[in-house]
Image 1 (cartoon, rainbow, N blue to C red):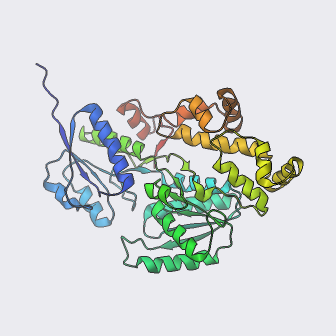
Image 2: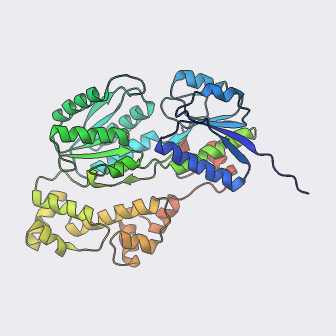
Image 3: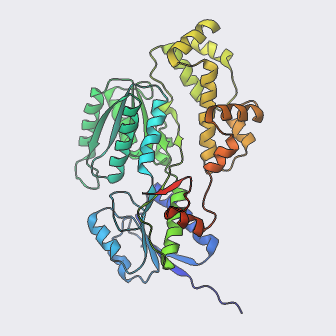
Length: 410
């Protein structure tokens, strides 16, 4: 009779209630379910358990989220392999899997740069490593494109007892110093919500005066009024790499030379960035209409009623203001929407993606996508859905023998 493989006990020493953490753990559970050899333990009642309890739990491995130097020392001294999932601070010598913070900053910057602002700003926390890296990358990308960028960094609530009201007041004062229209990146969706509320009190309209993008694709961003654009972290892939790495370490494997960095998914575009820095109110109204209706087929004729202009006049004004023809701009927006669907975790056929991006048929979609992106949509989809087919492939990429498209080692 074939003996059953002994189950490994895995401790999830991570805080409860954070959306991105639960997404990561869902992917970890999927990994474990496919292998059937892991069981899990979490501390009941405690939302943010101390790591000290892991010492005597008899586990074979653990996932943790280190938030300070004391916890980092504890994690390094634990009697079992540990994988850290947090990016609150840099932790040399502790195996870590996290999203690529620099790429998040670049992605948010490119999203706002596409909306033709000349003034930009970053709002985040001064004592969180991930926020500082996102800010550095965001500012570098904006300034490399010729834009101006202001920065407001405040202490995090975890590290400072400064009240919410006081931070909101300083945020409102800072917003008053910015000259609209301005594109703002917030370090997280929760910070983006604070910025959006401060805009209301400062008399600034979203997205007309302030285009706002956050990070995490937290449900709060979609439920906010107006819904907030957000950089999706790609938590499912973070979970996959974290689980694979812990499996490797429990089998006696060596840790990677640095943190494993997983590329973010895409910017989930919502109403808060459906604007451009446009002085002509008629063209601005038309651009907003295009963004709002990009999921359905329409042509330039429909835009004439929105702009209240004859066709030739409208096309001349649009070209002068935006820099490309209305037809080209519509196609660009459709392709941008298609890239979001192609990179998403939900399975869609190319025919469905073409339809949901407003293209009349699949042939037209392929033609326009290839022309603007430099590759067919099927190739783009493969690139953004590629995951290691085996642990061997993953760890070859860790050591530099073969890198994944979406993952690197710092």
